[in-house]
Amino acid sequence: MFNLNDIIDIAVRIEQNAEKVYTKAAKGASDPLLCSMFASLASDEIEHWKWFEALRVQAGPTGISPSLEEMGKTMLQDIVGDRAFSITETDLTKIENIKTLLDVAIELENDTIIFYEMIAGFVTDENTANGLNKIIDEESRHVRQLVESYTKR
Image (cartoon, rainbow, N blue to C red; front, side, top):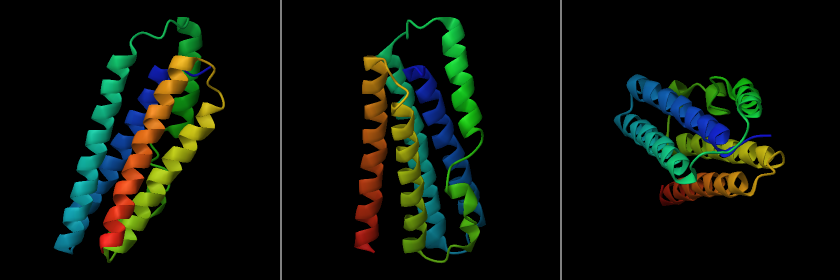
């Protein structure tokens, strides 16, 4: 039902939404260290959506009928909309320390992994499944980086 391009579209949207939230938080943070960390997280999200776009180029055309492709794309876009998952539920301007910020960022990454794992249940095409696994691996790598940053604090 879903093809890799649909999933990449959603992955890019999720990353762009998170980048906007982090950028806004960076502008509103009063603590210079938090401001820097928000800016760094925003930069990471930009790198992620660029990585996902590169994955699209590697994957090539889907070979799926245009009507099925449009249906899958519409369904995924309706699910995600402008959300950045758990991050939209947190007022980042109220965060007072790096550990709390990292907790929120880790929760966001874990939410996206759960979302992609849920989508995987609807994927029947091997190419799409492999691409989706790469996306999950990339998000998991980001969680590991954030956890590593957390343990250094």
